[in-house]
Image 1 (cartoon, rainbow, N blue to C red):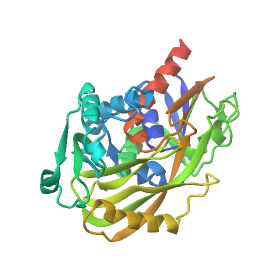
Image 2 (image 1 turned 180 degrees about the horizontal axis):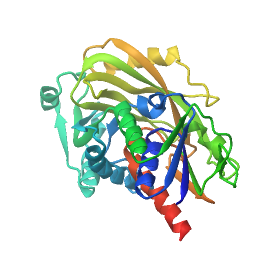
Image 3 (image 1 turned 180 degrees about the vertical axis):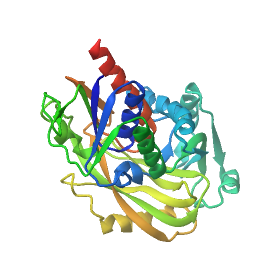
Length: 345
């Protein structure tokens, strides 16, 4: 029986462990935190997206496949997906004349969108700021409860005989692939921003920048997602908006973003919190109360925003994982295990 170690009990790590157990692996999971619900995956807004830019990228293929896998796994593992709409409002007149472009792209991938202008937009979305002149409405997005999924995966892994070691910090692995005195056939490292440190003896990490974003729980209730994008000179799209949390409470996600000099610097940044509150009324007519704020790590492959999965000598590592990683996690698990299967032939 092949032995697999998974480093990191976030969405990607747990989906990989679960899929590996179903394929007949003997699996151990190592998580530095003392609780799996403290991982960044468990603190994400919980968006399941059917498509991701750029549309022709490897990342988008993983997201689209992961989206379909979530539909099956939600029933298999017992977690719910609440489907809703995404609205992308805009204020610039030039965008009003260019909306046919994303519509054509979306149709190519089986997603139909509607363009709402003026009073049609506000009749459907009365909470929106009246400064917007139009909006793109896309159906098929999902809202899930991230801690609930993580707990469901943990239960599924244990039922299939997988071992989970909490509070275990894995030191940089070597080509011998030994963790905790156990030699493994394969190791998957999905430890977020710590991945590069764990695999540096085996895999050369890509150039990366580390940052922190804000995820703020608010008093507002919405049944749809609002997203607003701005593109920076770093080839990185800074999105912010509101998402209905699984249990109904609205949240500001990715309200702002700042580069951080060290990956450990994830403490709450009150300047970012003030920025989150400042941006809130730019989307909605009324400013909501901020109930709680979380600071999340962000990893960006620099200067490109490509999604990178590297596999070498029986070790797989995931780099540059942000919000779409939750959607793509089941597809990433299958991709890595398929690569291992090819190596073992």
